[in-house]
Length: 354
Image (cartoon, rainbow, N blue to C red; front, side):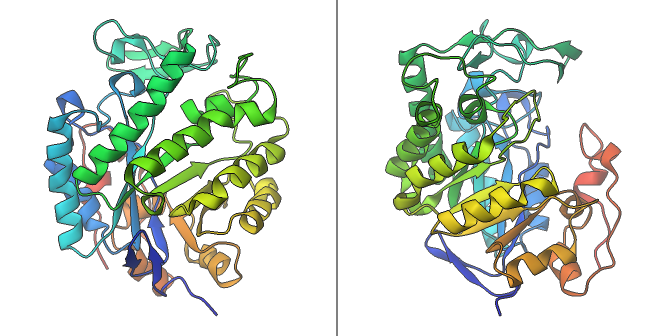
């Protein structure tokens, strides 16, 4: 029987275990989206994970959706990320950069040079976003033209090249949680009538083309995709998600990707997870829906074959040595969400080890 502590081959390397640090927004980059030494310390502390997936990293300036998030679209950012990846590798870890274009989730005050958020369609999401000036209502985004769609796809590919130049082992494309790729997939945020909108085969096209472009740029074995079928976060409406994601996985399955990462948002979506697991021939990473922080009980999902690897979020923030704690079934430090963002780094680096 396969266990969470067995090695697994991925992206031209062998992961020491099947425990993944899930990508989580940290908002601790410096000016210009440059990761700081604190970022290197944070990821290096968690290098005992089989795989680290970084916080969302914008592939272009207009892709930024929150304050102080890092980028991979200029030379200074690439150089700073090299310090992070070198440190993680020296500690024995493996690390993928998550490329996250926020699309309509953001605000002009977060963007340079008069830019505004962009999206598949000019549909403003309900709600507000945190900015350097406090909470602000979402704005109506600029609808991408066909040429701009193609340019955005090229931005992903270039950011992936930058990630490899910065020393990352691969990239995960963020197609979940209501950000740009998800916005193209969902009928409520994608009202286009061209080749990227309308029926399922058109709404999956952007996601497929991004995956193909990145795989061509850095190798399919260094490319992964994260999805969250039916997740309503960021005002996404997907009334019948399963056919969409089955069609998407069918299109990308033959590429030989590093993995498919499924994020569940409730126990009722497990049926869809199992369908995608059956359909996808590569490794499946699962960020499972659980009551409270995901803990050692989720490792049974590897043992019963539901997933090849399991991703942990909040519990990994409070327990940098989480793989060791999972092996002994605790004890666990309790996550203190109030410390996870902003200037206080206690939720970042200062929890006690076993």
